[in-house]
Image 1: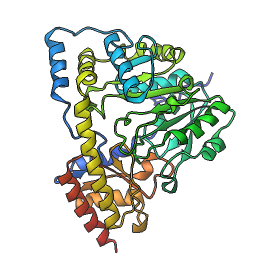
Image 2: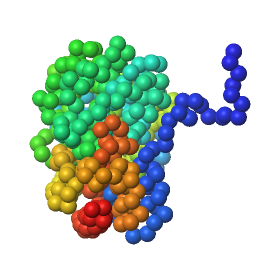
Image 3: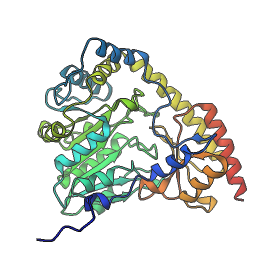
Image 4: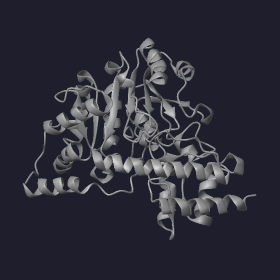
Length: 391
């Protein structure tokens, strides 16, 4: 028996995982005044009043006990109706939907439900910072596949095929994407689906930004014939309904997978907050007009922001969704880390260096436009002034 290493109290697995690269800039920015933050990935809108009122009413009526592990059936029925109406995705509320504590928990239980030790999971990057660490924590091996600005940060079929090995269990995709805002249409996803079927893989598809698709309709890989049985969809209320602090998400999948996910959920979370679930029912029943207004505002900001970046000399592809711009800073001669740090210290604009989002992210910065148009205009003025000092 190998003796335990003296003095080390935390697991080797956790020790090997690096802290989030976003946090470094949040911590630095929070200690400074007159900051314009483009680093935060959350709406600048307040949760619609009727949704907040539903939460208050839940408390007033004394709904303070646990709900079913999978979430209130009434809410799961509303989620099922929403998915069918908005995205043509039919799922049974009784055994194919679990209400989770945010989309983050949904990602965690999805991976832990399907990954065995040593399984490889392909992570399409640049992407949200938690994917690869969550694969590792589930006992799997993350395999990075980088996308490029030349391909509008879309996954190319030949890239996927080249990354597959006998140990590959699943791929993780996120469209609209954080941090690039890239989307993939039905035909492009169909080409990916053929390979997924050929190699008998599963797909974890994070579609938390689905409502924020600006040019055309959102396409889910689960819409493609044969893919419903292979896909786990992650979503939630944080982005579309401006409910980040409520920590309420959901995961949908075929019943054999939701059954496995529910075991993990019931042992770790028991259930999501009861009051938040009542609020979510109101959001789905009466909140879509508010969603539409917020999305329209984001689209207006996107158009301004991307055009402005191009004009000041930072080429930026047009993001089809989410609320992030991902301009190139390669012509400044700085790394994304250097650019973000110097911009913060000299002009007090907080952005996130692209490399923290994985392969293909270096040479770019992530800028959230989930802030007021006035803030965006002032940020562009400051960034323009900063890059002129580099010439």
